[in-house]
Length: 199
Image 1 (cartoon, rainbow, N blue to C red):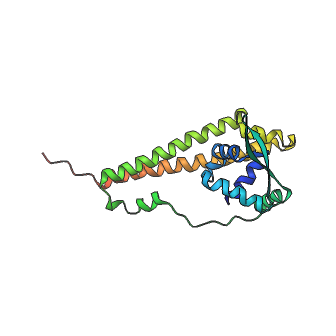
Image 2 (cartoon, rainbow, N blue to C red):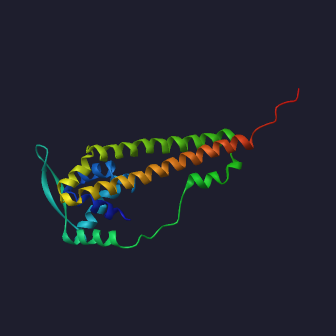
Image 3 (cartoon, rainbow, N blue to C red):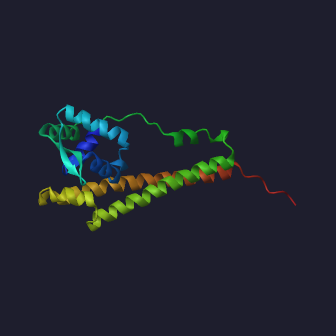
């Protein structure tokens, strides 16, 4: 996946300004593809230059203007082509698991702190993703409801199901990482236990 495919995915819902895209990105796509504003705005300009988007000035506030982006037919074709091509997987870069392979170099308390931080990180994500599933189930996901307004009723069930499926996968991954870190904490305790004094 590239940033432009993530942006095209959002723009299939409706035209948006860069500001609106950034907000929508952080509320949805960023759960599976991180990008800061410093990458989003230049990519929108490149996509417009490549004919995937058309930008138009729209009123913003009492006297201001913003650029609103509309996806073109070429943009829709590019997104559809990407969706239908096989995914190429990149090699893993995982600092937490790299560090875990060498925990014998860490002080036990530092190793425990690293694994507690890992648990806290994935527990926070798990809670956030469970909330996303709740929003899908209750019809309170603003972005999803916008998408459904522009989609045929015959596609609503599959749109909801695929969104839910995605978050279920993220929840399962978070739960796996939490369990892995908990096993690590138990391993640290086992490897660093001292025999009780005789007596």
